[in-house]
Length: 229
Image (spheres, rainbow, N blue to C red):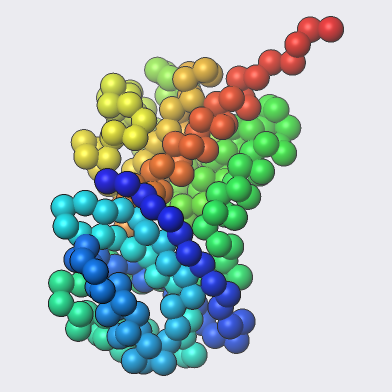
């Protein structure tokens, strides 16, 4: 499955903003039908992120501007009127939430601007925020010693065993063989893995691709050496 392009627009600052994750048939007009149902409750689609496609289905995240929180339940009911569409998750977000591509660049900037000895910890914090994770942690391999963490990290012995057992799958291929609510990226130059997880929704292809891309950048930054003078 491939992640594809992202579109975002400006939301009205006086409105409340929600992100709705939907499963819909991968057919022409399906997304337009969903947008029509959203408009039926007086809401406006201000952003679209295409998370994943495959098996005849598409998974999209729609950023929706509502005039009032009381419209959330009617909004979900309207979306479900479209044949074959299911709502996976809906959650409030800040109206000034950065556009997806800007958020990724901000995460990279956060790591790159950190002091060399703090870049691993900065990577944990950046990924934790970028993917709305419940926790993130950087582990030394194979021992599982923690180099940085954010949030309520699960049992470290379990996490180290999970990561060590998943390494043979390779970055980008773990999704079909491991729990969907955990994502990780390897930093091979410094024998580290950065993992993150969340309980309320799984990681899809686009999110995993972002995590792995940031991992490759962090690996280069952490392992770089200043030439001797």
